[in-house]
Image 1: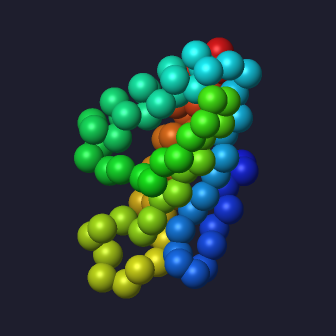
Image 2 (image 1 turned 135 degrees about the vertical axis):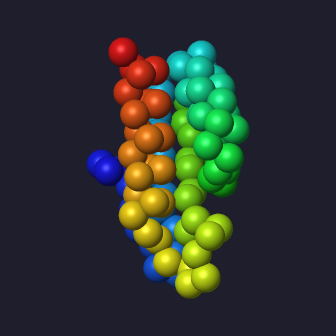
Length: 87
């Protein structure tokens, strides 16, 4: 989970992805959108021409608002999408 920051107030995981071009940014956004629809989980996303900021809040199934193993696994899956774009 390289580059992810865990914040406590509010509980969340955050990461910024940087890209060489708008096309690569767009490719990652498209893949991320498809993946999120497939798993029915949607992080907060903001982006510009060559960057994307992602915030993962605690999974909705939990009564207590804490980052869990499920949230970390979701972050790892997002990282794997980015690796595919770079290759």
